[in-house]
Image (cartoon, rainbow, N blue to C red; front, side):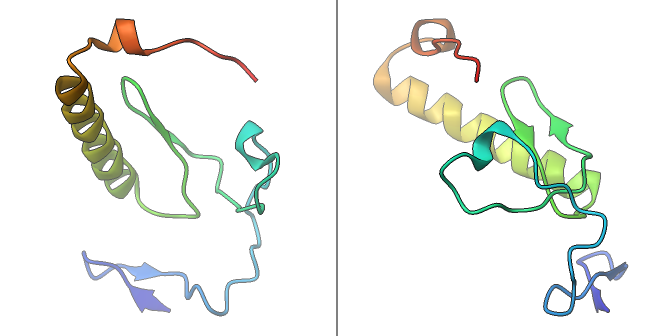
Length: 89
C-alpha cells in the first residue's frame, strides 16, 4: 500500500488487479477501457470519475476544470450557453 497526500493508505496501483472497478460508460467507445469505482463527483459542468481517489481529490480536479473552462470561454469571448451544444450519447 502507498499513501496519499493526507497520509492515508491508498491501493498500490502496480499490484491493483482492478477488483471492484467498473468499465462502463459512454466515453469508452473507441478508447482503451479505464475502470472507475462508480462514485463520480459532479460539478456544475463536469463529472469526474476515478479509480478510488477520494471525493476531495475528485472535487479538486472538477474545480480546476471549471476554472480552465471559464478561462477558455473568456479568451474566446463567449458565454457557456453560447459555447455549449448539448449532446447525448
